Structure formats: structure tokens, C-alpha cells
Length: 266
Length: 88
Ligand SMILES: Nc1ncnc2c1ncn2[C@@H]1O[C@H](COP(=O)(O)OP(=O)(O)OP(=O)(O)O)[C@@H](O)[C@H]1O
Ligand SMILES: [Mg+2]
Image 1 (cartoon, chains in turn green, cyan):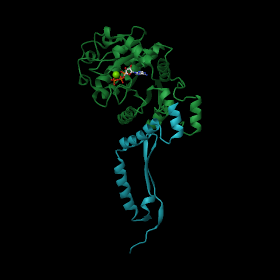
Image 2: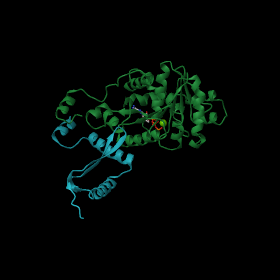
Image 3: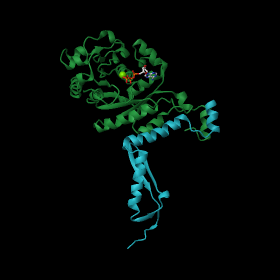
Image 4: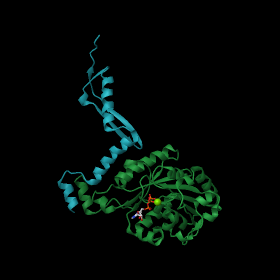
């Protein structure tokens, strides 16, 4: 068995990469998979607080890369879920402290003992992004249903293809079904139409995401939240199961039907 | 509700439709590195070359870039008005 390395990236910042990394990692681990999440955003450490592991860090990714510790010493075990590990980024270094070949070497060392390695990429198209996609077997691009995020996602998809990493899969985050119904937000169909890549999942806008992040517990452990369910579904799709998309953006209410009669619905 | 009524009684496209239309053009631009102005020049040059062989009404000529998956296509629709009268 050898782990699959998945890199989660985006063009625009703040669209939800770190939240997705934590939740996809947690969801896979609750399904009995052995998972390590790597924070590849060197200098802007975040994944540790989203997972609630900030107080347990002794060594980080750069320590492992530079040989100050063994890789296993930089792997922090999760509080809630067995077989979920975090490799935190360094807070006081910058992205030049790690190279794409370092990332490949670290992931290759992890592969034999794990099922999944999820890499949280920094935003943008620079060194940090190049580091993050270097070891990837598969890339997931996250966007929000919003003009500049979709535009930047398109750029990233082009670059990932040019780097011969295959065509990435799409995750649409923070979709607000109410606004889509009112025709004031791009629908998932619109975004897929424009970007023309495979849709891995849709995560709705959900206040519970902020609350769970405040507590340092991934939302996907909360079965009542829609966003949590969406992440569980994404994890199951990564495992090869065929799970239909949560029906969020196609309202079937009265107004929706009327408006499509008038030809302004879709 | 307001929004719904507005949509029926006005021809104003919704903000989501506007976003999609704008994005469509921006993505074509980004992917091909061809601006609307450059496309206009391409059209003029094409017209000049084609006019050496066939008779074309410039106003009926249409050039567009369409998207098929992640592949862009240049589509030219050029009605031929007749053979060119040779000057020799
Ligand atoms: N589905 C969602 N619903 C509501 N809020 C969300 C959702 N997903 C993410 N957020 C919020 O959006 C903010 C940015 O998320 P996150 O840090 O995961 O983005 P990022 O892409 O990693 O950012 P950066 O580019 O800075 O690394 C956070 O406050 C997070 O709680
Ligand atoms: Mg982040």
C-alpha cells in the first residue's frame, strides 16, 4: 500500500483551502484511513489551529526537511481521530526554506505507512504553490462562486495542467443556495460550465464552519451541519464511492418553478 | 420576492447572469491572451487576405472564440458574396 498525495490549492486566497484540508483529512480518517495533513504554507501556519493542535507542536516541516528531527517527530497526532496526523509548517521561516524536491522526498517517505497525504497549499502561483503541487498525485482546486475567485481558479487549472499534474478536480466552497435561487450568485452549474473540469463537491456557506474553527474541531465531525456532510461526501468520492451531490443550489420551490416558466430561471 | 418581481417585469439580467457573461469573456481573454481589440485586428487582417480570393461583405463576417471544454476555438463565419473579378 502506498498513500495517495492530494494537494488542495486555489488561485485566490481565503477561499477555504485550509478548512478543506482539515476536513477532508478528518473525514478520511474517520473512515478508518491513515492520513497526514501537511501545512505547506510556510511562514503562515494555520492548519494547526484549524485542527486544534497548536499546543502540541514541537517540530515542524522545515525541521524535518533540514534534518533537525526525524519526520515522525514532526507528525502530530490528532486529539479526536486515530490515524490522523498533522505536519505543521514553520511560522518563522519563508517559503524558500523548502523546495519542490524536498516536498517530493518528504511525501515519498510518508507513502508506505499511510493511505492519504493531504497538502494544504498557499494561495497564489509562486514558490509555495510550486512546492505544494510537486508531490501531488492529484490536485483539487477550490473556488468560491464569485468572479475573481473563479478567474484565479482558471489560471491555476492552466498552470497545474502545464506542470503535467493532470486536470485538477473542482471543489466549490461557500455556495449560498438562497442567493443562487435569487439569481444573485453563480450556481455550481455556472462555475462548472466556465471552468470545464470535474466537480468533486460543493460545500455550502455555513456559520457552523467558523464556530467549529473557533473550537479547533473539524466541522465534518458534526453530522448535523451541511458543510460537515458535504466534506464527508467529498471524502467518500475520493475513496471511489459514487455519492450524488447534495442538492443545494437547485431550489424546487414555487418561485423557482414560476420563474423558469418565464424563462429567467436557469 | 422583490427580486423575483424585478426579474419578471424587467429585462435587466440578474447579477449572476452578468457575472457569468463577464467571466466567460475574461476567461477567453486570459486563456488565449487575445483581447477584444486584438480579435478585431485579427478580423481585419483575415478580411484582407481572404478578399484576395473571394468577395466578402465585411459587415456579414463574424469571428468568435467559443469554449469547448477547456479548449478554445476560433470560429469564423464568412458568407461569400461572389467570385472576385480578376484584374488581369
Ligand atoms: N463553507 C464555509 N462556510 C463559511 N465559512 C467558511 C467556509 N469555508 C471556509 N470558511 C471561512 O473562510 C475563512 C477562510 O478559510 P481558510 O482559512 O480555510 O481559507 P484559505 O484558502 O486556507 O486561506 P489562505 O489563502 O489565507 O490560506 C475562514 O474564516 C473560514 O472559517
Ligand atoms: Mg490557508
